[in-house]
Length: 111
Length: 276
Image (tube, rainbow over the protein chains, first blue to last red):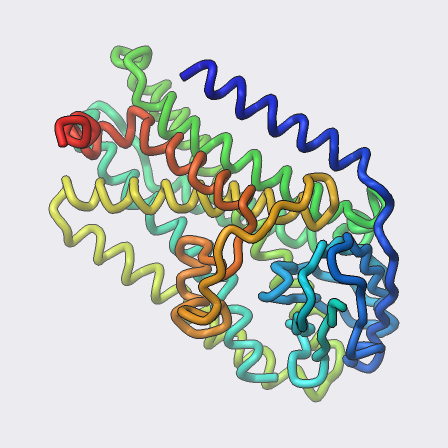
């Protein structure tokens, strides 16, 4: 039992170290204005980690949420934030603003 | 705005309400296990509620600043730390509280149990409550939204709280043995959910490596369906969890299932499994 735990811990810490050493991600910008995403369709390279920088130009907070991307994060008004996504397999991944879902809709397209 | 407000509040309140109900039922059951001398007043819940609401308000205030820490992933780091502390206290509750060390120190046992429960509920409220406050604070800054959003919020919160009350009375109507068993099983799911959330947050912050998707049940049970959302609040259902999320979910559940508190609830279950 102890050996198993040690092995699991070691492999987890190795994973952690390897993630720190991994190459820098592609950075893509997304703007929130008037409760809309610009661009509403974000093209990203498939198979690569992407650093999504979301700039909220509205004075109100918004929550970026995507079931398909498995991501969820509150962005305060007039602030920016960073969310890492992927590497994704080619396809479409819808996202929305949970606080203003009627208008704030978009999708990530991995190619 | 109205419907969205109902759904948002319902989701956040439901998660906290279910946890509080389960812990309150466990408080009742502890009296039966450790006898009349084990005095555990249910007033702990009031301390937890007051501290939790104050904490949520404070955290909502500092969220914009916290978000910018660690190169804009401060929110993930602090939230996963909050999750980690709750997980620690849940494990303390299920491993240390029932230990024989306390067999002749009933009042210390009660203090440990109360402290753990207050911290667990307080942190759940900080997490869920701060998000509610940020939402309400932002959306109601436009005056035309105030009435639909606040009435939706009251209804959503009302439904969430009712579900908690129904669960509480549902569990107390069961026999003591079964109430205890169901509570412990739910507690194991809560721990799994927290562990999986920690992994999700740290992956989102790029502090943990990406792992492939373990399975995809989006076609079978979409996360945005009513059942999917309910299951998300109850056991942290995700249609496409990553492998690391699934593994940590399982490990956290096992920590509770192999704990002494679980064995008190399900005596002999592990032995029976070995026989089969």
